[in-house]
Length: 142
Image (cartoon, rainbow, N blue to C red; front, top):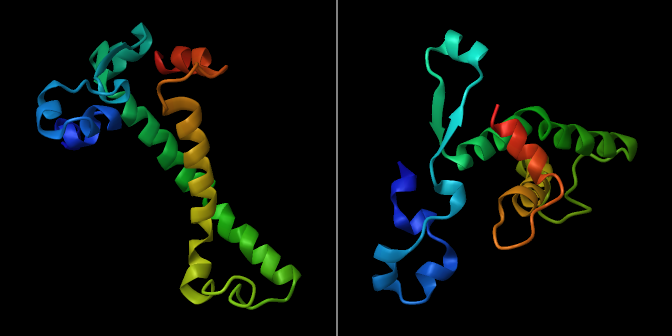
């Protein structure tokens, strides 16, 4: 639904040059352009279709969701381990404002780091391809 809005899918440079005119002529970033993927024959017979039309951003969203579900909660466990090792109730004395409710947000630090690294490695356009990009392209094609 949000992909249909030009404000969200056009590149920053395309919209900032001359706003009203650029909305009709901006090119959609490649991560928001639909792609058709071929399913292997063995999978196609089970699911009932051989082609899947998906936006690459949907694959990236799945990766971020899996990381947020499986790995990011360990940020809280890590913070709890530090507090127990140093016999600290919460981090309010070390990091001002980081007590109580903020102790529940420790997993966000891991998620922020992962999202930044993932974006700069796999999503950001306009630079040379990262060394692992061919592997990712092969694995996404099924």
